[in-house]
Image 1 (spheres, rainbow, N blue to C red):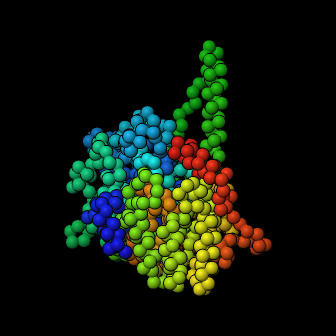
Image 2 (cartoon, rainbow, N blue to C red):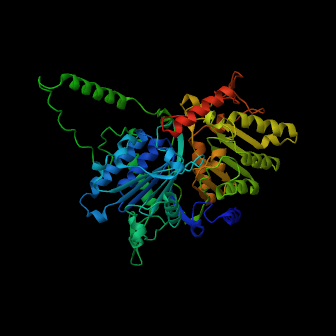
Image 3 (cartoon, helix red, strand yellow):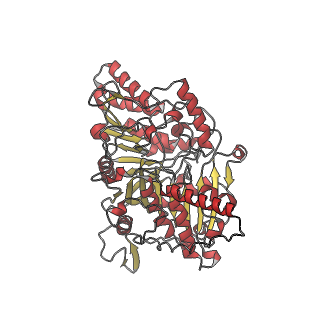
Length: 564
């Protein structure tokens, strides 16, 4: 698989948005999270506020939200902790996202001015005096979306996640990595930024500051650090265990707390200071109309904050386990299998590391293929799975019913999941070789449900991007199995060669959902309830009206005003 990936570099050394010398690497993965967005954002918050030198945060879609509040508060706390340090020693933080701007036709990278931060749900510049903060908006028109989602802290820890920073009822997956592979993420971050940094990342300018202490994967004897041969040895697995305990101290803490709510038990940051006393009432000489208007606005804001922003019933489901601590392991082979953004419409830009990794894995599979993705409609992956079924490889698909139907019905976007499942089943049935039994096509079913829910209802969706080949190799990260991710978006993924991790992640994914138990479609590709009624998404197989709605929502999404 990796040999085939390297062949793509003949078309350009940066086709994988990573320097060839660091595409293949190794590392340990002491923790994964399979949960809703707030759990992952709380974890990001903990990593950010404990940064010593620098933070690089990348996301596709950023919107003012409960999820962004965790980053907002983390930046303020990191600044507070660092204010006493000399300016040249204060942490440097970079944030990059994609929000379409007409100026990007001329210049793909657009710096976001400090005056615009507050409107994005970021702290004002005055609140971040203890850090150096820069924000970049990156998009390659027309179709080259920056779809990457990752975090690099102190050039020592990397996280790659499936989620954007927004409020959605999605099941998501985050992977925490340490070791040499972090250098690969660092390289990807620098290539993605693509502009002069002001100031530059301190560990780029002075790499001697990087914490390069070796780590020990044996059971701990002296906590997270021990002395071995005169050297201080870190234990990333023990660190991950302690972080998990911080995230979930009690059963109640398993639910994400609203960022506006004080949480004195959260040891990751100081408790929120009491609010100052209310301002005195306006005197009769003051503008009572203005005071009344201000009071009304404050009341409205308080009411909006009190509204639940996400349905957390899912993570109350019996046995739901958000934080996955793998067994101790030596560093395992890990490769970056990414794709650079391609803005030109069409399906020409297909020979890239990400796509070749997926296609090679499915083609070379000897026993099984498991894919979980929100959307499944890229022609290459559809044909690869059908060919695998014809070779008697069991192919299991966990796909979200109705996810992004309006977007997927746009021209050259591949079609709805409903349409694809029906066509795949029809193809295998018509061939009459008995190979339909090898296709286990399932709609995503949440841990607390017994049947799939149309994504348009915004009750239970899945946004995990995961591919497991022969229970040995896993490809996980940012890329969906849809036309946009296959042909256009910038994506970042890791390919991990470890039977142990593959087995533990597959077990955890199945444990935190009921897709395999209740989600499999019938012989014709349709899912029926106990009364025989077909459950289909609102987009169905697509039509002219749905396509027009999709186009309108595409414009709204680029403008940062919602959409699909």
